[in-house]
Amino acid sequence: MAKLFGFSIEDTQSKSAKIVSPVPKNNEDGVDNFISSGFYGQYVDIEGAYRNEHELIKRYREMALHPEVDSAIEDVVNEAIVTDLYDSPVEVELSNLNASEGIKKKIREEFRYLKETMDFDKKSHEIFRNWYIDGRLYYLKVIDPKNPQEGIQDLRYIDPMKLKYIRQEKRSNDSPDLGIRVNGGRDKEVIPNPQFDEYYLYTLKPNFPTGMVASAGKGAVKISKDSITYCTSGLVDRNRHRVLSYLQKAIKALNQLRMIEDSLVIYRLSRAPERRIFYIDVGNLPKIKAEQYLKEVMNRYRNKLVYNAQTGEIRDDRKFMSMMEDFWLPRREGGRGTEITTLPGGQNLGELTDIEYFQKKLYRSLGVPESRIGADSGFNLGRSSEILRDELQFSKFVGRLRKRFANMFNDMLRTQLVLKNIVTPEDWEQMEDHIQYDFLYDNQFAELKESEMLQSRLSNLATIEPYIGKYYSTEYVRKRVLQQTDQEIEEIDMQIEDEIEKGILPNPAEVDPITGEPLPQEGQDLGAVPTDEDPDAAASQITDAQYQKDTKTAEL
Image (cartoon, rainbow, N blue to C red; front, top):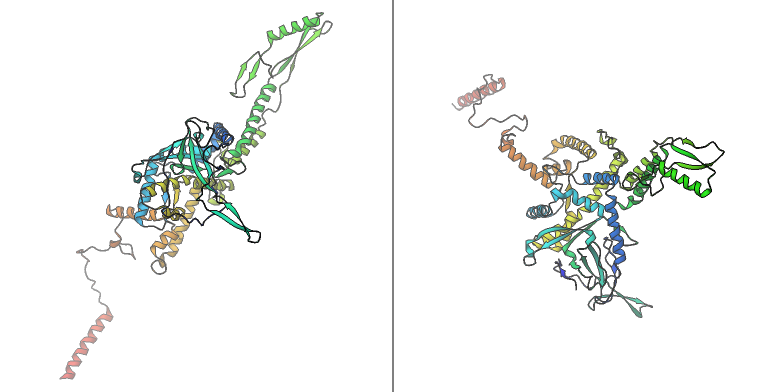
């Protein structure tokens, strides 16, 4: 039997056996459900499915070597993964997570550790490119079996050509059945509740082993499901149960472009040069000798240039017929003798309309705007309202790719947090939907849009500022008006405190909130008292003195 290694994360509370269904859980991973009544002695034909998958991945990688496809892939990858000198390509966002600050801090630390283990900051471009081309991504989570509470020790990339995900049905007496009453409730029809074993088969060779599932083929290793991080593109051929890549839609367009280009090159090579017609005088020679004499003359003067469609080279090869071959015609005695006539070359060979059409078709199939085909084409740095629709669609497409790619971080983070007893599997199911991942943006159109949004937010802030403290709180304004996250608020507050300590910013306690001028310090000379007397105050003092005098007189 193949060796089974890895670990599994189980719930602390087993689910009720009453929750049964005749329909198995649908995992959009492109894996078919192989039905077997027993674990031993059951043959499963999985060679064909894997052979097709193997060929698909090989075709995707060959497509990525073409210049046009490679350029489109680089556009997608560069938009999705932005490398910066100071910032990481992706950070975890926990502003929507309802948890304590201690839990959030631990989640950020563990996510940073996982990125360092993967070396994601340096290899992010390569990792995302491999996922985009192959349509799937595998990572082995290396755990110390003796100390699983230490978490993931290493993350190792696995070539999709060497790994296969299998879901096999198992039958046991303990599995509950779903009973349905038929014939007016007199009879009971038992419908089984399918249970499945999910595992991976790994082989060092780039082909999948065949044979019994029990033995899993010679040289194959059986790996548990929780030991592998499996991230797919989200595109699944439901008829054949196969995961597809985003390059699948461009296969036909690329083949058409290649054929058009090769035919255009051959046509131009064959039509561009001038051809010659040789009329060879064979006199009264017999037919056989005339043909022999004509071949001798042909071999003496003709050119044998052959075009290689794979390399694009032109070489001299006298073994094969060439499209640039001249015409050799025999002529009997009594004619005009040996004669050479020149045929003109082709005209209008500079038409590239069909090539441009198939290039645009290829880019459209890959989801890349057509305006990015030309390397010398620029972009308009105008307002966001002037952005083309295809650029907006491309930005949304990249956003969907990021969402799908982030499932890899979710699986790794779940394993790490559960193993270190930071959260429980039940808690993770509630927290998973509230954990987001913030990718860096480098799209010029997104930058323009962000600039206009910032101006609008500052304008709203100036409008709402008189009502802060009366109808709105400062925290509400920062989160709803300025759209600042919890992490951004914490970082900005720390930066403000640091700049106040360094003297870059004035201390708010020492500034007049009305005038904005610094308040006088303690012990500071406030200046001379004004000498101008208030007439009303002087009159008040005189009136008080007269009142006291009159009171004393009355008492006497």
